[in-house]
Image (tube, rainbow, N blue to C red; front, side, top):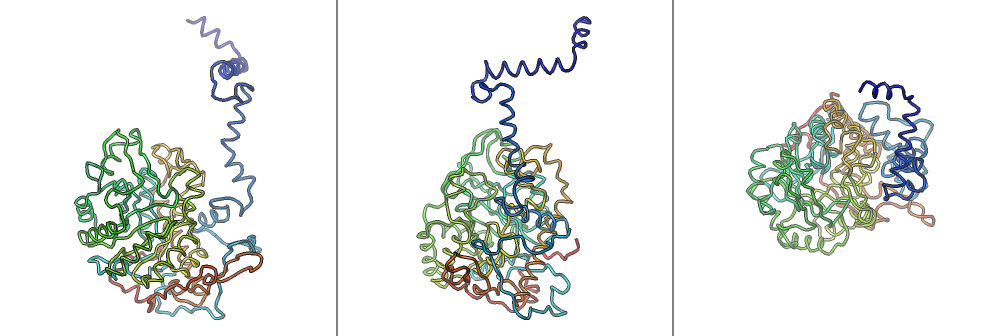
Length: 522
């Protein structure tokens, strides 16, 4: 044995390297048959796959310019990072954006801006900006709710996101006075860290699922009774990433914790079908909305990505006839989001947010229903200028997902679906998520929201308004084409938004249904 050790220790490191390269070459030529490049070019062929694997990072940091990347360019990411860290998020030497590019947004400023009175809530908290509408007020729900923030965290499930990420987000919305949508993975302990919650379920009915995989109103009632943090219920009809497509949660990914939260069996594949079992048509959907609202007392809404309008028109017609209907509608953009999807879905199925929302809003506008509904926009709206456009088009609140993820450390690696998220956010790896400092990251989410609201408030005041609900379609112009370079939103999309009843921000501050307010102490 000593002779063997002596012989091995006498071999130089470069000889070991040659042996390793020789073994790799043997493997490439004679054993592996999956990769032609590796077979034809043994050893060096591995460089091709390694360079391909780091291609996105190389382009992100060294090749792409500041405004070139998608889905979020370097300037957009930089603004979120700086805002979340309370750093200088200004730009110097003028805009580097092409102001004549298609769909560039222009917000018309007033000659004399709105002046904040000394006794105004914004005089002491510049980030105070609640929703101008009360969710559930029209339908006289037992527990109406006015979100204390116009920007909130969109639907992202525990399971898709790590426990540390969900906990950081919930503690962050608690500090910012916003709400946190659970996503369809059920209400986890990490969602119950003090923040207001919108409970969301899809076709899998996770968290409110019967043994046969159907929706259980009894389980939902118990969940709501035991968790007063739940302020509303959202039924997912579809999502921007993959509307009309179901999914499978592999049994290998179902831990005992996830099984308990979602109400499924450990180690057994779980199907989320493309369609709901609790209803099969619009009339039955309306019945389910009323059942949930009556049994829980909470406002109930629906979420969908917009494509064909016939069933939305049927929904609106039933609302006119019955005087009932959803308390809010969350409109998701077809740009996709945190949910992984085939490119054929992410790139082509359902309309982008501006087209989808404008089409849907007109359906309810024509029937004079817009004052009954709180419209929530979701689709890369987490920037003040884009939010101004959304509010001018009829939105009352916005939800953000990827922007919220970036505020707690997401680097847009675009490998959310691989369980290898380097920032520890979209992964169940204990090692990777241990890198998330929950108290620090929750502060950053809260600071991003507060910075967003502060800048949005300043833009609103520059336009001459006290609250963004007052934005009109004529206040925003967008570049359209070369023959008619820019037009107002009203001309571009062919409608005028309904005026939102509004007295002043002080009245919103004094509203008994307002969500928990957190002053700007960060």
